[in-house]
Image (cartoon, rainbow, N blue to C red; front, side, top):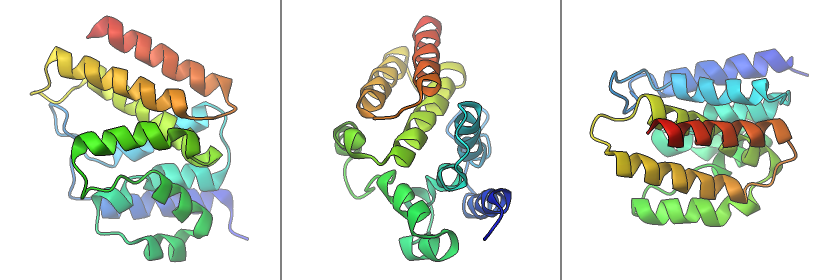
Length: 178
């Protein structure tokens, strides 16, 4: 049986290697790996200790944004981690608005682990859109993102009041700042 910290460190290394040439869209073009690490940190700050859920947070964008295949994730991290990452993966072949609509529609169907990661992903993104948005995003676009993120999170079924409240607080501060 692998130590929980070993799984988390393997997932961190895997994500860092997969995202090594990617940057965030913020004004300083931050290294992409900061995002999945932030999402995983949000989970742990909310008391989530399941190493597979934390690993899924670290890996949540690998299928969508890198050349990673589900079979590779399953082989390296197991079926449960792979399944959660697949639940969190948008189909990039679809138009952006359709992908956004589907995130709202599918939120109530997410497994408990994937729903936790989804909320933390939205916390991280709302924070970024509020404090370090892409330079070409207008106030209206930023506010629309916050409204959409709230719709996604509203559908997520989780039993973690601390995490729900964290999203509410981040969203409220975002609306005040923008």
